[in-house]
Length: 266
Ligand code: 5GP
Image 1 (cartoon, rainbow, N blue to C red):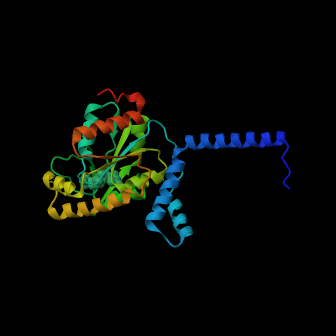
Image 2 (cartoon, helix red, strand yellow):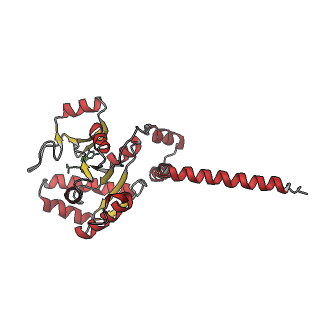
Image 3 (spheres, rainbow, N blue to C red):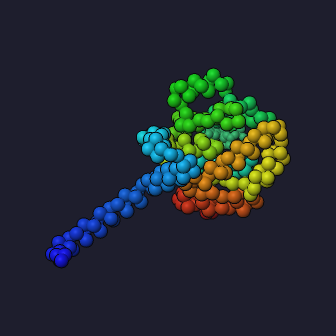
């Protein structure tokens, strides 16, 4: 027969267990990134279904860098397939809230489009210059996208954060994953098109690319939308169908993220 525990000891056990549970809960609340990392790991594992789980885990976690010292307000990563209206959204945010945001101007090896200015839309550089920046570890992340390099400059992001503004990172999905693994704490917004067909139409109507490049971008977008299911760190996913309705949702989300900055007002 089981012996009953001494009531005093039992009460002590319960109190200790409750105290530890509370301590764990407080720690998890203080570090939401734990849940994000574990969810992201599990989602990617299920997406890839590797045979060797240990090798997969070893590779997955090897990408993580120790979190850099971070000051200022958290940057906002805005990610979307090409043609989903990222540029329009960012232009509107900068116009309506000029004191709250600053865009991190990426480096790219893509040629400037008509109307784009160096240092404003991008820093347009030659491949050799871009590769020198990689070698000097000057990028938080960089990717090759549709045959060109794109990268986010580390010092620029830090300077914007130090200035007390929300640094906007307008990047594609692979870059967003790299930012997540870089340890830089950010908020992540993903913009989706109402459909792949509507995306193709928008790219054609935009008229900035040849048909062949448009098809390449549509193919990348399909891959990105498939991959999105496995990426749990995007705290918000919004569909951009009618811009004003979409913009109202973005502002509501910003108000949640940065309540003191008055996004609810406009
Ligand atoms: P576009 O050539 O249309 O200006 O940009 C192509 C894609 O690259 C877009 O999805 C854009 O958001 C993304 N992009 C722009 N700058 C960066 C960057 O610094 N890093 C990454 N990863 N993507 C970028």
